[in-house]
Length: 635
Image (tube, rainbow, N blue to C red; front, side, top):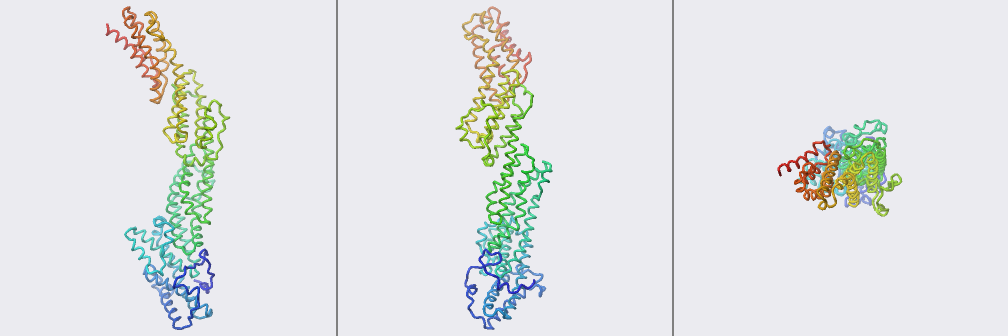
């Protein structure tokens, strides 16, 4: 080590915030530093001090002893290491006292030489402990210790009676071997750092620490699969590969925050508890590069131009990950010098939010521009309805972050849709949060599009069934997903009413002519009039069943509701006509040619509708034959 003169004596002692000095709290053994009035001119006294210091320091001089060159002081004996640290501290006090009486003293020169040898020894020990304990000082082991506050308040000062081995032995039963070794290494590093900083050699100590610890952090980031990438590289990257990297990043963020950065902050705060500025500088220089790579990745992805609607979920995953770890980010990177790390994380949140809003706008545009002309057979559920509602139900799972992303998003422009689609008052909408309004708007855009597709049906009754099916599917998806919490029960109830209206319109257009084929008062008509009524009913019912058998209602509940509603209007009236005139028609021999269906046949025929199975001639006749069978048996 190059001779540094008398810097251990003449460096400026500042407050603990100084990056190269440390002013310990006054104690009986250190009060001489502030009042160097004691005379040390006694040759015997000074001789003893120097002899003791020289014996201890020279024993561990790597340049003069083969033993000390290959042996670690701290691994050989912690008790002797503690004595070595005490010796150096006493030598420093002695130098301060002697310089006050005679700054040209030969004893001062000897003391300075011994100090430099001691610092060289401690540098070597500091390096060895850091290097040889990489496994015990890995972030996971360090972060398993108590919080930064407790580690900073705990003492490892080798001037105390209990050394680190004594401290750890007390808690030996409650910690693992790795944690025990980690605690011992941390205590050793702290004692060396405090000694070197107080002796004016903080710069050398910090340099070693930064080099070794930065390599560990950088290696940790690399092992987590996070690498520095340019915007152009991400832009050219295939989506499958980029999605893989996003998935990997999500895992890496959790590990980095819980162990990597958290562990380094704990270790740095503990080792350099003597100086706030040193621990801040160390932690910043060690972690800033890795942290910028980690937190900069989402911003690059968000700006890459890969903003099709289906990719929004990965953007939301990254936004959620940063948001959920924000408390840890603020805590670990709370130092003034680490503000840029927080700024980078915020920048990524902002860009991700912008990307999500752009994707949702594209999604809305995709709905509005859907130009498919194909008609869904039987008035079933349109593929667009399925795609949109699947997308929105998945999107609603991210409502905890979308509430912030959409907080300042401009409200949808109603002018882009017909006024008839808005049945809520302005006061209702003003009370709803922006996220609820946005989801309601996207569903409204879908319903408007479906209304246009319903007009492609030539049969108006089928158009209404199409609208009932699709709106019912929308409501079902809302009620079975987180959309229910965003839109509320009132929204679902209002749209339930619309489903009933659509179903009623279908029923009126498709089945009214069958219902009207029956007399209003079946018991008041004559047998001849009854014969005509049966004929009209047979024709109307046969036509209706054949036509409506192609219709489909996928939802069991809605299917049953429609069938029950039709049956309630049709079967009781037909049963009255049947029961009133059955005997008379049988007596005249007109029953078999006129009456094709028993009341039970009508109900059974209706029960088999809305499965989308087109009726053949045998489909209807199979029910009429059952009536014939009963007739023949009665004879």
